[in-house]
Each structure stands twice: as structure tokens, then as C-alpha cells.
Length: 191
Image (cartoon, rainbow, N blue to C red; front, side, top):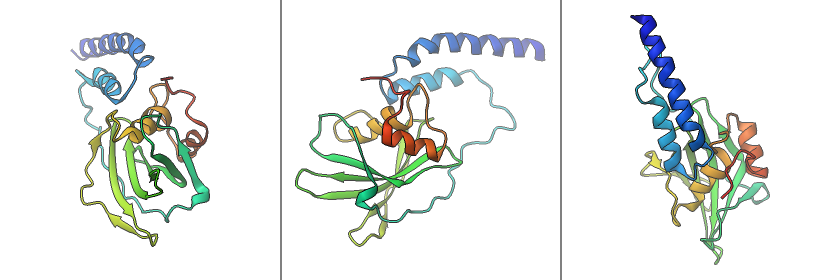
């Protein structure tokens, strides 16, 4: 019985891999990644030793310094400028990329936030907002939210698709997350 179960599982994995392979090369956003992720785990039995995902403790970073801000390209749909504080970027044992995001309006107004991104689920979380004095104010709603491709949250979609969570290779370390922030992710699918 076990051999038949193993054989069926192996055949199912092979079929899913063949079906998902062409899709990965053409994934254009978080919705595509979610379909790929679902197709790879549907029908799979959860192993007895497999633990559910659990978020690790995080520590708020120091306030961002202007000299450490790395601009990110979010396209031409917004006049706001976005940058990430490079020293704040970390990749946790829970597979979450955490970073400080600085959004600047054309008039010079600045919003600072400390956020997290889960590539495996195409979700983001807001941890805290930066205050003018360099301290942090904890976010009231710190739930994980789906990353969507729209004008309001274009910066999250850009960080997901073009930097941290590309279908050709998501980051897997702090060093790698900081490197792709500076130079872009070579595995990113061109727009």
C-alpha cells in the first residue's frame, strides 16, 4: 500500500512540475505566484513532522539615514518616490524579508514604515510607522495582507516581483536581499 501511495505521489509531483514549469516563466504578479504555489501543494499530504509556519520575533531597526536609502523603481504610475533603508533589510528564519520603506510625495512629505514580506504566500505586513523624532509607533492593524498590483500599493508589488520574490528565484538570505535591492534581481521577469 505504501509503495502504491509513493508511486502516486511521485507521479502527481511530476505532472504538477510539468504543468507549472511554463507558467513560472510567464508569471506577472502575486496572483500568478499564488496559483503556482497552490498547484504545487494541492493533493499533497502534510507530513507528520511538518510544523505550521510561525513568525519569529523581530526587532525594530534604527530610524533610516538618508545616505542609506536605496531608491526602488515602481514604474511611472505614481509621482511618489520610494526607497528602502538598506541596513534595515533582513531575511528571517521564518522566511520573511523585513525592511524600512520610505515614501516621499512630490511635495516632500515623507512616510516611513517598517514592513515584512512573505514570498511563499505573496503577503505583506506593516509592523510600525516612523515618527519625526526617529522613534516608532506600532501599527494598529498588523495583519498579513495579500500583495496586489494596483496604483495604491504599487511599491509592494514592485518589491515582490522585481526584487525579493521573483518567480525565477526568491531571496534566501539577508545578504542576497540587500544585493538585489541595490542591483535588482536577475531572476525577475521583465515587465
